[in-house]
Image 1: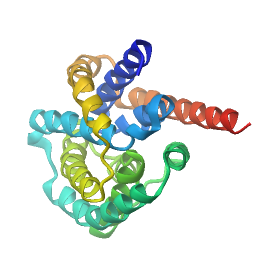
Image 2: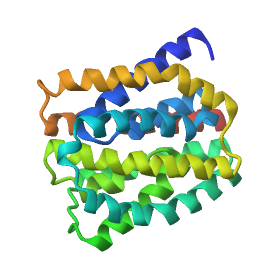
Image 3: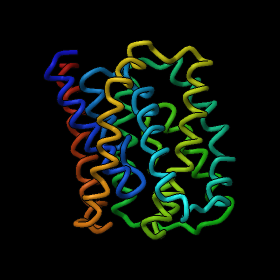
Length: 241
């Protein structure tokens, strides 16, 4: 990785962690497409490990607003989704994962813009958890299903509950990837170097929250995610031709 790539990656991680700290999701949606452009083999491990750092901090800060019951039902669905996702990572190529990242991100953006608001029940939370586990383990973009289910929650409750879910879920994904032998050593080293940027993003989010309401932050997250996905698709098409 060149100095320029390292700097750009650090900036993306900083922004993605800030987004996650502000609205409770979006780190993978923003960071994964740009990471894939630099080095697709870093996915999904890099985002998963950095997300664990960010969500741990947010859980501690917003612990008073946690919905433990809702997070528990979602985690019940996350386990089987994670196992299936880890198996896909072990057999899919880095290029295929890049296309999957772009597709998942664009699907999440479209569904969010269409304003779908499903009922929050035990079943819908478990199903969303399973989809999140599958998507998060294969592409590191697992926030979309949970964001759709819990999008009506207030700020602290949304951030705290989603962070608790992603902290446990990301840990499960990382363990599953280790068992499948899908954790490259250079991804672990890169995560260590990027960790300070992730922590800085969470700190920055506390200041950003004073000036951006959730609607504006959500719009920025969707716009940046769509731009990253489109950029990734264009790049892969250029490589093909």
